[in-house]
Image (cartoon, rainbow, N blue to C red; front, side):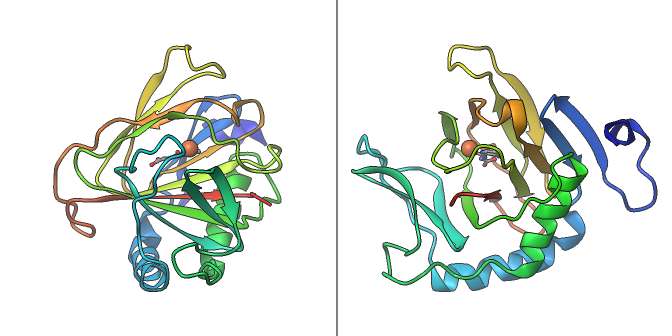
Length: 217
Ligand code: MD6
Ligand code: FE
């Protein structure tokens, strides 16, 4: 099974690059779906607008976020957590499109995590200069499920660290359509995104959007 990852991509199979025991980069896997994903993102943002959350430490995040699915990720002076309701509207988050859940499940399976069913998708929007500081994703209830991350628009330099903040980070570029899957022994690695360089993407303009699918509840 795992050995298939190193075989050359056949037909429309994305090229899978194993970066660590539980980390696989599926090059360009989401690119054919990008136009649909963008239409869906517009519809989701019409219901649950992108906003700049404030961290528990009182900083306004440069990255703008929204969510879809049963649970959405929220940050406020009380901490980080998942919530069934959008605190902006008091309403449930927009539903996760079936095609999104399917894509995330397919990507996870290709990376060796069969049976992944996402219940939350955090949508992050970066403009040039925006960054995401080194962090761990640890607000989810169960770390046995992987995280599936879809990159759209301008390329970003992603820092992949270790299980301790002090460990040295590897840097990799996440491009339009790339899907990064990580789980198992890598699930709690520190990671971040360097300040986004300027540019114009044909579909998204001067912007990068990242979708992270999780099993949060
Ligand atoms: C981003 N991603 O790529 C931010 N977290 O914009 C994340 O923070 C992230 O890509 C967990 C797993 C994959 C990710
Ligand atoms: Fe993260």
